[in-house]
Image (cartoon, rainbow, N blue to C red):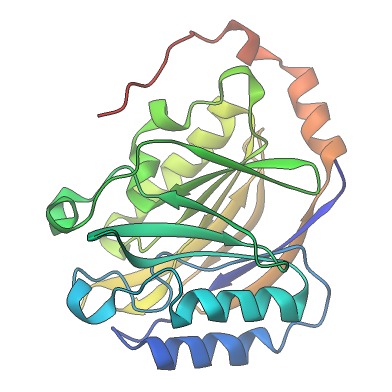
Length: 260
């Protein structure tokens, strides 16, 4: 493992306006003043969290995937975020992990937010996805997944970072602030949560609170309210020290998750 430089983009999103979002995101990213290994964008970063698949869905060869590749090449780093994908007649809230060489990983959101009717439109994912960067193993998760700890349980230390991208509303931001440290402590991993800011098309306000919490509960980064582009570095020795000091995961219950 090598030190990992991470850039969080807590972005304001324009409702169902892919062109404007991609243009604004690219403009803001151009202000990056240091090399980074990973740029993380919020859930549905190109449209906002919408159920309007007729207008907003794209194919895997669409403009947003191409835009992600362009940015990954430009900054020679991984670019991560989710968008609405139509694939074989089904719709997915798909988390894309785009590498600068054009290869990518994808994670389809497993827990769909029934209070917004997400499960009526989208198909849930079946499996967890763990990717690697600089020797760090990263478990990809999306928004509502945060409420389901069994799905993210770090049995046998299979990952080092638990990454949530989200469109988490301010009305429930206390839950976000409580659950992210809980996931970090119980899984002895860094947890990164990247949220959006501003009102969406349904006049739901998002207050950001993007954060990175260390395995011991310490806060590496936290930003409420404002749009923010921020870079920080995680060090493997810090992770190793925390895990060696209190190695409680060796006593964890063993179980398996059955596909629904």
